[in-house]
Image 1 (cartoon, helix red, strand yellow):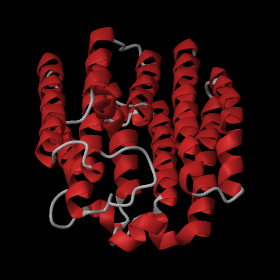
Image 2: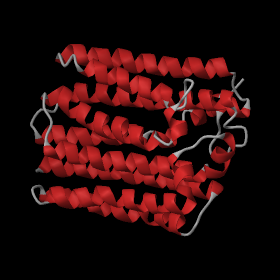
Image 3: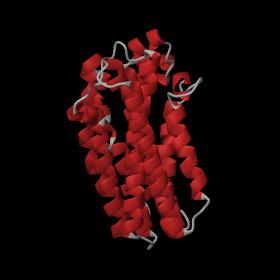
Length: 290
């Protein structure tokens, strides 16, 4: 029987910035449009948190029963380590998806944006089939694309649209920036797991690109949010305050360019996630002030 601490670790709290950051960035764009509503933003945040915890448990279950996590380098996996029965982890995943679905339904019903139900259903299906089902797309190198879509475009633009009824160029720019940040976190994770994923037959984008190519891809992606910041600052100069988050990436970039491997890459995920969250908070402030 897994302990409470192990369940918390299994939920992978270091990934939570991937859920919080897009909503915060979306709030900034919503304020800029003059349409901010605090309780709608809160519901959007709870939906995002439930989804990411659900996908973490779903990945734990699916990878565990496939044997992908038999020789894992990263944080604890409940099924792969034998700490929890697969059915319990599956139940936890489905419960989180259910919570996300109910909260999303409440939000849509309250705002009348009914077509967003289709987007919500797509997010839940995308979360499950990342590593679940007979042909999971995460095993075919499409994980980064899904993260960009669901935790970038969908999360940011959904937060804006459900409140404002429209989106803006600022919202789209924030969505691209946060989406690239989220991709970077997954790229770092998959870079660490290249050796074990290759053996397990999990052909992630990192496996396809190889070690050197994945490191270059990380560096390209991490530059995108700051390019977006400078471009949007032409119309909203206050956005330049988000550039102060760049030094937070000094250590992750040093580890990536220095050839860090295995456990040495684990802090990269945390530091990159914190930089993403910090960027989103300051971008939110910049847009709100503008």
